[in-house]
Length: 176
Ligand code: NI
Image 1: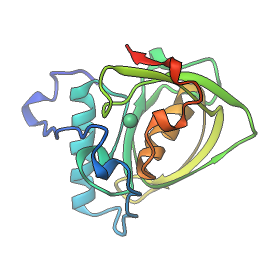
Image 2 (image 1 turned 90 degrees about the vertical axis):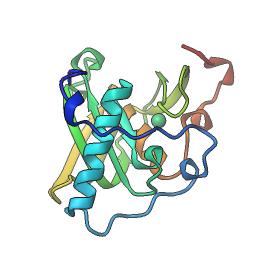
Image 3 (image 1 turned 90 degrees about the horizontal axis):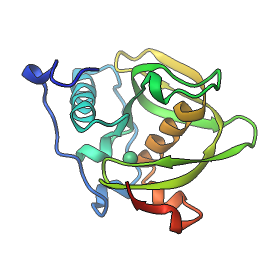
């Protein structure tokens, strides 16, 4: 998604930083995923994510305690895992995730709510996730590698967890 291309009709929200209560609360389930309000929120979130140069954003990061995330996996982040990206911009409402197998892998993560820092976080290597898109269509995908990592990171925002809470070695937290 080219930056600049959408500038004319972009609505970007300020991104909430770590320490705000909204980031440590469990987000509320969305009763009406196909509503215009949710479609508008999804677009705002996608615009805000693009403007900030991120690969994922969860609604609590724009002060909305609602169970919705947006993400994409650019081709250059894709690993050789067959279930990894090139994943186009995706909206996931009321998601659930489950681990497939028990393999856990370490990888570097950053977060738009913790600008400048990055850390090594263990995540499930393979997951299955389910949810709805902003039109109410069901989504079910198997994800591996970076794709699985992004979805787990954004899902954590919806249950009030920030990536440093998942870290096992805090010496691997530092400025990028
Ligand atoms: Ni984040």
